[in-house]
Image (tube, rainbow over all chains, first blue to last red):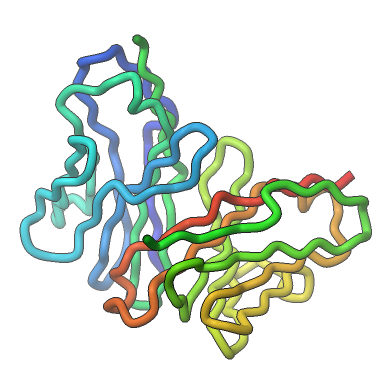
Amino acid sequence: AQSVSQHNHHVILSEAASLELGCNYSYGGTVNLFWYVQYPGQHLQLLLKYFSGDPLVKGIKGFEAEFIKSKFSFNLRKPSVQWSDTAEYFCAVGSSASKIIFGSGTRLSIRP
Amino acid sequence: GAVVSQHPSWVICKSGTSVKIECRSLDFQATTMFWYRQFPKQSLMLMATSNEGSKATYEQGVEKDKFLINHASLTLSTLTVTSAHPEDSSFYICSARKQGVGSYNSPLHFGNGTRLTVT
């Protein structure tokens, strides 16, 4: 069975700081990886996804993530965060069973 | 496009009663819908996979007799919490995947969630 770990539960940064949120997964087969974001009071939205090909994936709003197969990781990055990036970020893995399993989420707080 | 509507957005019910939550894909057809439960400050926990025209597939530990799922059409899935108890109070979120778009690698579209409070 697949599983996803997000080790950072709460990250606090100042505006313009660089961001990296960790995500590690466990699954024996071919995986597809996702990052979703949930802004306060809103529903989950897809930030980016990895299916195959270039392991460096560009998403919306300046986010990117890198799939490192040897480390079973799919960390989310942004070079310079903004106050509007305050949200909860979920890493997720999809399997051939059509299920998508989510990590525990990382709350990102940006100090203006 | 790809809008998922969930209704109601919040509901308060008395212990022992049943509550139905609807999940509709407004502008696409969804053969598969998923029901998640989110506890405060925790992640989304997949409860079940709802397949149009067939029985739902429940995750381990989820009581299928308590959480009844019906996916009667390509645009509607319902979750009924039967004989609700205070410990069922939670945030329930549905998501849907577009019909015919690849397979498991297509992204999900989420509803806004339903906050259930059982008193």
